[in-house]
Image 1 (cartoon, helix red, strand yellow):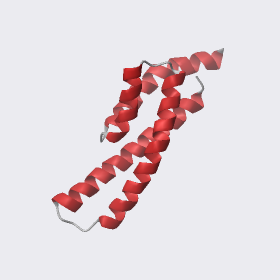
Image 2 (tube, helix red, strand yellow):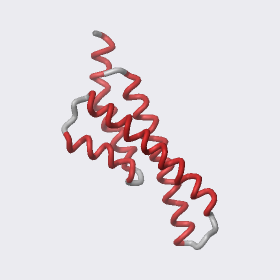
Image 3 (tube, helix red, strand yellow):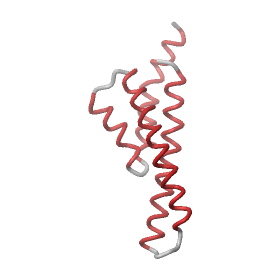
Length: 107
């Protein structure tokens, strides 16, 4: 597996994770605290939605190249919808795949 496959997944995992946390905070502020944050929340929601689609493509590409089982693939894809889950899944994926990337780099 190439380093670029892992790197682009990692970048999108962090970006979608941060946007999802911001979106969650915005929704709590909007509906829980009755604050008028409709503009920023809308922008964050749109950005997260589009970037989540790109995250799905990159995560699927990485998982298929790593030949992961179906359950792990699904968990990796779903992690972008649970606040903070993307960070933990990304860290575990990086730990598991770095030896594969290093092995291919030396070969």
